[in-house]
Length: 370
Image: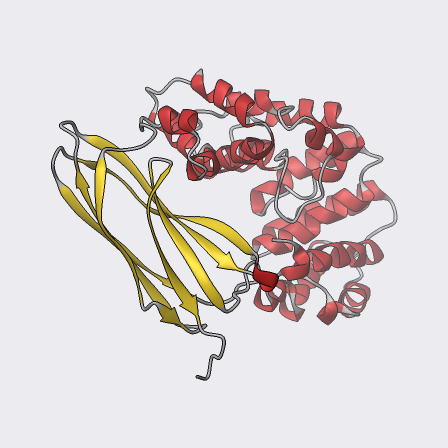
């Protein structure tokens, strides 16, 4: 999702109330913080801005309100952070470092190490990576062994090749594996917060360098449940594509010995805002137990007769020899900022261990009022 498509409710996280909280924090920690100037600058034109535009706008308003000398301003910024009560307020504060601290590398990265504990500095680190990726990644490698999970998570999240809402880094775009040493250091991290970031980072790499990822993960130990969780999370895109090597890494055969007794969607005609029920029944035809990854792929109708496919998870489970299982879920057919529905026929495939084994369809009515 880009910030241009961010829902209004999300951008309102940095609305007038958040500005007051930031202003109060600045005023309480230093008489050198110009509260009135901040509120005036931050409020001007705020309504028209998306969430990430507001982050940058607030950082510029802080610059108006803080001392001109960066070192003095940074001291106030660091004192403000513990008084903020939402992560995006802290993101806006860390953005000040990104916009005005590039010329003071050591002091700025030391500040981000501290500030990320109160929210996240994942966006603020990006300009430093763009300016000098080697020097910045060297510091982030040190963060990977930090005692604080927030700092370790920043090492992974801040260096993601495809970090959502963030600017792309030329060096990481050209070689998304540059942060491999960070990921290696975190592959068995005790924090779920960190492990999720590592899995997301690896999943980013899967979209550009799938063979590199599969080779790397094949060498990771599978006797640690924390590492196993990261591997599964990292492979989710490749598993949805039915990549045999990805399936093998999670102990799943490519294809399965099953008969699809039923695969249906009800109702077969639906209007926007309604819900479909997806149901399937599978029978094992194998003499052995099987690990099954069951997904379904919806081919969404698009304008001009085109379609766009998206894979959804149904269930991952073990099926005993000769046994049958019923699967089902309900899915709302409604528009999102990232997906708009169009009237027409929507083909749906049932995918088992990477192979399509059944199909059905439903229609979205062209007249919601009909």
